[in-house]
Length: 632
View 1 (cartoon, rainbow, N blue to C red):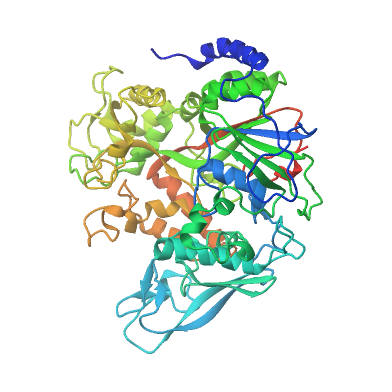
View 2 (cartoon, one colour; view 1 turned 30 degrees about the vertical axis):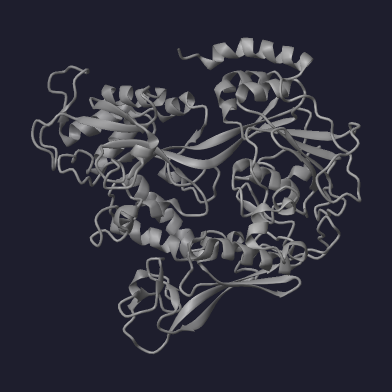
């Protein structure tokens, strides 16, 4: 039996208030420890409850707090309290409590330097791929930012290429919680640890780095691989400091297993850890060595992260007064309609973290199945876009943010508002289909349209498509909505539900990345990269060498457009604050919107629950606790 969460919540809340009176089993009221200043490890402390405690309930417990160990959402949330994120991005603007300035070309902390590159040295080639300078490799000579100035290497003398240098100026006056000053050497040490752990297969900020050095106690100099200009944001290449004075002699095994790295890491943020009771909570105390350059010292003496399991237990803890904030609990979305009602009544506040995943409907434009030819014409895809009520789909999905038209989050200044052209207009969509030759031959809206004169489509072909979606045997409600909307337009939809690992398996076995599908509903993880690169021609999956990425390509739709490729290439091969990239951002969105390799739906969001009495809680992009010290 499937329960409707809206009707189920009322008895749950009755249970919640009962639990508030008697405590939640397995999660009794916390006795916050008062730390002994002389005690340097986890242990027992006297336990009177202090006056000001901020309690945050998390839906999962991390396994480790070592920076390069556990990368879970909960671990990163807790690290916000002890590391005071080096650079915050809020409302698409950067700020920092670690750096004197955010690097840019305007303040001359970012520069492009011509360097001589010898054969056999590592470079980034004309397509943005890591390569070795050798005969036949196409590269960008110094000063080249367009496709018309690329050159193939032909065993000549060393060539001159551009190398990006970023200077990160570290503020003075920041101390670790043991009183030792934090310096640029701690950031250099962090890079060295990350490089040793990940090697050449690590994240972008390691793969594209030639050197990362502390020039002095206050200055870090980053140098990129020659030819690499495709930096998404400069702060991405700043490494969060680790205490070299305390951890510098530890082995790799000790970094991953020591109590002082995994359970009690030294802090330079607003709080420091004093206790971790596995399965229940982590207690932190205000860091007396912390200095906020915004003059925002923490108001709360103690911070507690406690762990709950599921939305029901999270709500029980909240109404029992044991949580001031509930975060990283996916189960909250099941009760969202009632929570919105209670927010209106002043009982709670809701915040949303948008951007974790970009959900879309992918079109099988250039399928490897020769029978799948119905979606090759952009006009067909435009009509389908206007047949689908995306607002209705978003309303049926509790984790859905605002409906989007393109490649950027709502509010992102890079958004081109002029490209928003596909609202729900089934009558207009039907007109486009009929103009193309898709005819309602029997005047029966329950049967699919038939092709008469549709370019590239055999006469008499019925407009029938399959829609792939991940899940169990039960068809998701949002998918049924898509099916119903398209049938109104005369397009018959067969829904195929597959397990996620089968649906998204690499080609040629996986139906999506094996390019044998009509429509597919799935999401892409977001992060420090341009979404346009998912749809360039070089990313089409298929047999190598015909397809450069082999079956590892991301462009499952098979979409190929030279203008799109050229504009996306400019995004991938220019600095983020260059004039070239600002122009390319506008052009790539225009081509994307006209051609629609996929139909964007929304960026998924997480829900955070907090008490109305809390002031100053503001969720940043991907950083829900960026201003933890400002909460009052």
